[in-house]
Image (cartoon, rainbow over all chains, first blue to last red; front, side, top):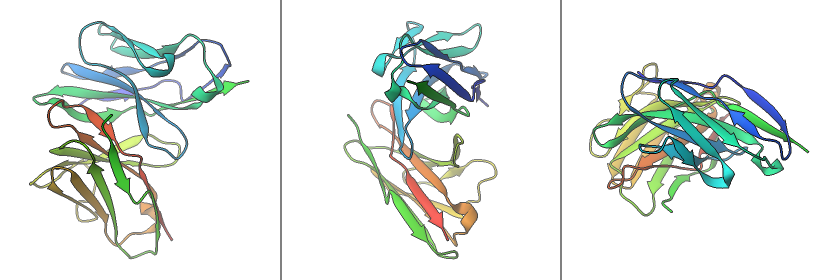
Length: 116
Length: 115
């Protein structure tokens, strides 16, 4: 069974500073990896996903993540954050099932707070 | 882009009543949908996998008689919380897997408050 660890439960960062949100996963098979963002009282929005190919994945809102198979990591980065990036961020993993996506398992989440 | 609609977005009910939440894929067919539960300030916990035309697969620890899931068509799955109690109050989110691309799309969530 797969699992996801997000070591930082809360990350405060000043506006226009860079940020990295860490994610590590464990699985016995090949995986797909995702980052989602959730604003208060709302559903999830996909930021980016890694399915195959290039290990550096670019997503929406200036975010990117790098898949590192040897370290089983998929850290999320943004070079310059904005106030509007304040939200909860979830890393998620899905085994590569027979029909594309298997069930998606979420990490505990990281609360990003951007300080003016 | 593909849209998944959940209804109702908010519901308040009395203890002991049953509540149904709908999850619809608006512009694609989904043979598989997933139901998640999210407590305040916590992550999403997978409750069950809903398969069109067959019984749902529940995760360990989830009471299938408490949380009834019906996936009657390729665009609709329902979650019924039976005999709801205050501890069932939560944010419930569904996701649907697009038939041809395999991509997952999430609904906006339904907040259930049981008084």
